[in-house]
Length: 622
Image 1 (cartoon, rainbow, N blue to C red):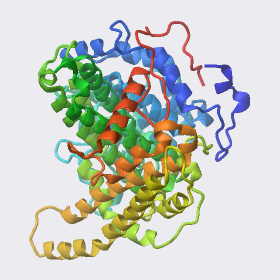
Image 2 (tube, helix red, strand yellow):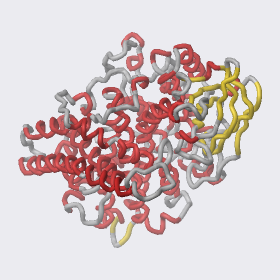
Image 3 (spheres, rainbow, N blue to C red):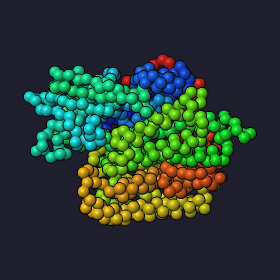
Image 4 (cartoon, helix red, strand yellow):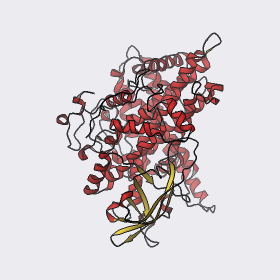
């Protein structure tokens, strides 16, 4: 990378100033690709064969982690105003995608540094400077200590105690299961500081502490947990026994713990989409490559019509997921205050798109899916196992859907307030963005969602679109009809809210031991909203980028096929017109053989056979 990309003379620390070409997520990602080399080369630190071998031994991929740190990966978690490289959420998303496509154990083990973001969200200037300096020096390994054995995702019910004591706090209890519990240097932990007279939502406080700051008492790691996937990760726990820590380790005010925890999760849920897309890329690439080289019935197995259509549909799902994720990370810059809903929508739908692909591709691979050896499809199985965790951590799918369901009434109210805005910055992938400000995220989004609010404007833009060689009047007419149907479906979701409330009233007559009473009908509506959100995102990306995307993407045939799906993540044999399936299949193969990400834009992967780069890292220190 040339010095121009990171020249301090070209950068500005002024909040809200648009970022220029110095912040280029594609360029930074391609630098990391070259730094790590081709994952098919066994000798590279983050390679498929090494990942499989370490998986068999349940061993932490330390060499891969060290290689990633040598690139300067940790600097992308620290805001530029504090000396780091965090200005663009898209860069961080793309870097996570690049690592996850190689080895989720490396990605998940090292991306725990994202939890230091709680200091940027709620910490004092002194806390921010202190923690930023620690990360930039290197060696910081945070863990997120929220969940407890008896309570899981119900953070308000946690029993872990943080007892005020003479200007400090005494910590007692255990957190389990958590990533990096035993091997962490820093802990982000939520504990009870209030008593029974304190309102339930104000009983918890948040702490970010260096384990070396424990003044007395003990901190211990709990045993590792055998897991289905992420077998190289330190999934374990942490325990505190009368551990006294200074008051300066508390982030925010006493009693703000739950709110701060949720604000952090809204950001990390959005970035989870990069992990899903990374594993999804490798699953599709592995299956398509194997089937293209496998000869059956006098030709490549990939060209059997049944197989080709499933591969085409899988590729189409990757494009929709790509659009939803890219719009999401751009939204983190532009509409940060609206992510109480948005983050959940993006995380649920991208994971669903990728997970459904995994199920379909495993069937297409047939017997090879059951063979673990690397020369068969061992890396496919590893990605299938590891990637499935994304729908579970940082708030499982039911937790995210419940959050959406509880905000549907606010969404219905917000939709009655028309928004006349220029939506181009959200969808135009080359439009400049203001600096990412994580401290602006809030759990009180009041039902606002920029993607749904933009739908009338997108429909109007589509109405004004002139026919082109690849996208004639017939296709434009279909797309306009589909956009109108999207709006009608969205209206229908909110019209059915009343029915769900009636069911809720009937349910209230049935005694329940659980305090969680969200009606299943509301959860179903939340699922439908997730699917519609992805479709609108894809429409917006196409409209605002078609002139420069060119050819296949500009023609819009892929978009028409995506909008025709009933549930956007699900597909069946025979859903696609033969000609559409063929063109999707051909485009997937072009990106595969050209070594590009499965994406609406061109992102180059490491060259085939490339060994990891030698010499100094291309990303200088902050």
